[in-house]
Image 1 (cartoon, rainbow, N blue to C red):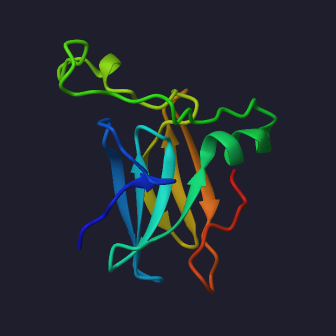
Image 2: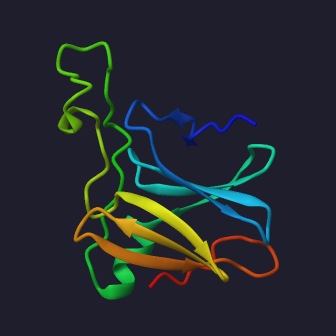
Length: 136
């Protein structure tokens, strides 16, 4: 299986993946993208079934300012400004939306956020396996 981490035809430019978690009940994978801050939901054939955006969907639930991804950003790994030993040059998502540390438990996806750090969760729809839209 090959996973392509893409957002609106824009591939990840270099920051990479945060974590992968397997949901055995729905036979799917959750993958965090350290560049966009999104969590992608994949079937076992590698098809992207949707995304969850903590910065735009999670934060406002707690009356925190929404933090969006700027698709104009990117990193050129061949540039002299890029240093593989310096994470400040990797185009990581803002800490308020940078998601990693994924785990599935029951019908929820738990995840860590760089700001804090904090632990949040979002429901997994029992029937479809989709994000339930109830972050906490």
